[in-house]
Amino acid sequence: MRCVAYPDDLLVEGERVALYSHPHWRTCVGPAAVFLAAVAVAAFVAAVVRLQSWAVVGWLVLAVLAAAVVARYTVLPLVRWRSTHLVVTNHRLLVREGVFSRSGIDVPIGRVDSVRTRRTLGERLAGCGTLLVDAGGEEPMRFAEVPDVERVQALLHREISRDLARRREETGRAVETERSAS
Image: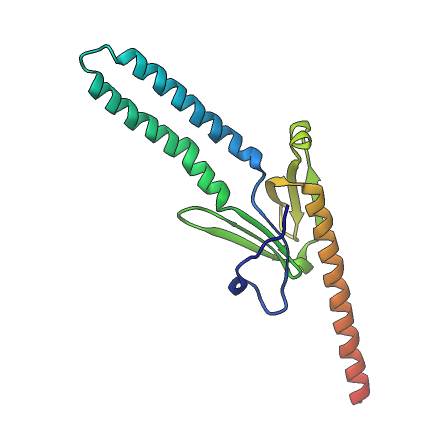
């Protein structure tokens, strides 16, 4: 995962991006397979229909059906993949997803109680996994298909430790200021 720019207007003062990622590329394998299958089936049916008297109408119907299948099962999932973001900053964990209607969740780093990972054999081979973040809610938040999930877990732990140290330092300064004012 590479760290790229995240829109500055979504960050608060002093906040820096530690990680910016999309779901793992393996989520695109199914849509790519549907695309290849749709093209193969459409080409086969077009070849069968070519000798019929109604071939032109058949090809038109076939093209519309193939385009609908590709749009629904290839283009939409790829756009959904591209519009899903996992961002870790020094202040919070952000998740944004959605194509037409967007939803998001921001969890302050200081509220994260635990970070766990779960990886099946297939996920281990692909280099991804599921990230489970417990932020004091009823159930842990679950983020599937996270690339290099163990690295993300370590990065979250590092940011949690830094946030805790920063808050301790600020508390210590506030106590010293109070003492010197007394």
